[in-house]
Amino acid sequence: MEKSLQSTRGTAYPRRAVLRGAGRVAASVAVGALAGSRAFAPTRARAASATTVLFTSVGITCEAPIFVAAAQGYFKDEGLDVTLAGAATAAEAFGRLAKGSADAVLEPAFGLAPPWLPAGVQLGDLAATAGVQRGCASLIVAADSPYHTIADLKGQKVAASAPWHFFYGEPMAQAGLNPLKDIDWQPQLAPPAIAAALANKSVAAAAVFEPFSATLESAGLARGLVVQDMPPMQMDYCCSVIVPGALLRADRSKAAAITRALMRGSAWAAAHKAETAQLEVAGKYIKATLADNQSAIGTIAFVPSVTAALANTRDVLGRMIKLGFLDPATDVPGLLNQIFVPVTADLPTSAQALPQSGGAPLSLPLGGGLALLGLGLLARRAGRGRRDESEQADPGV
Image 1 (cartoon, helix red, strand yellow):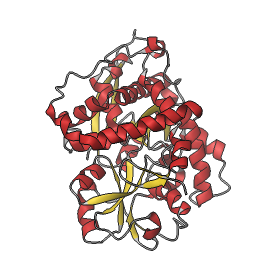
Image 2 (cartoon, one colour; image 1 turned 135 degrees about the horizontal axis):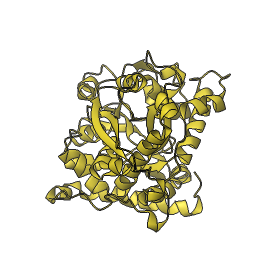
Image 3 (tube, one colour; image 1 turned 180 degrees about the vertical axis):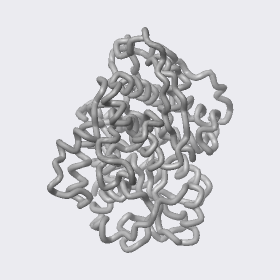
Image 4 (tube, helix red, strand yellow; image 1 turned 60 degrees about the vertical axis):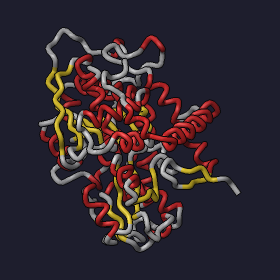
């Protein structure tokens, strides 16, 4: 029998399956950690272009590339005069982008597939241009829940927005469930409502993003049943740079500049996780303790890439068809061309290509609060290090 390797949150998976997929992560992280080059910078002769980038107002750890890019000067370095603005939901953000009142947001590229576009947004109104991170999502249950495997959720109420029915549908299918028939899907819950909903058993499980899963777990209120940093989901990008289709048609260079700035922010976050976690807490971008946000950020792989994200989106569309979330007659290459539009190259890998603006640790005091992270975070890092070593034998994406 194969040994199990625990997720950073305790979900068990076969070790061999982990190594097959997770070995691919480190190469992309290494590419990202050396991000940002003058070779990709736009012409500086024109005035800075006013740009609005949206983030989730409730506060999501995985949106760190936005906050880092602003703090490290990457938007400015790319010729952008950026304003950061909150949006309550992905539907609101997509609507604002489609109407032209904002220029970018971080959301999954697969959320641009026709079944999941919000009302008023059409195919082609938005497009992904690069991936920036993987690993932010979890499916959690109450700490004292009788549900210990995903197969236990058969016939139960699970709260998640529509695109995440597919996302969690894959591990469900592997456990012998039909995600379209065997789960009583409920609307996505706002993070503050999740603990009560699990406690009073109005739902058996709920989809949640970091830092809320880390916060609920540290409070003893929940535990992770499925965690995205483990198979079969660990290679799927859950945050990509999303821009308006109108921007791509009218000012492709601006779309490229936004994409590069956010990729550079992702790369810096990968190389400076402790500082990134502190930036989010100190800047009040998220509502979590430093220790909980460090725990949260430990599950996230900041892996900025155009080519890997494009390939992953193509793969996801094929899997959506297999699981019944897309019509089998769907023209996958045609759909891919509409929802993922590369506008810039992957970040350079040479040591000479370090970021030109910023790149040093943030000037935030990293005080004794970091000592609260404890052995759990060290164990996570050790586990990631072991998985990264396997990448030497399997560098493909």
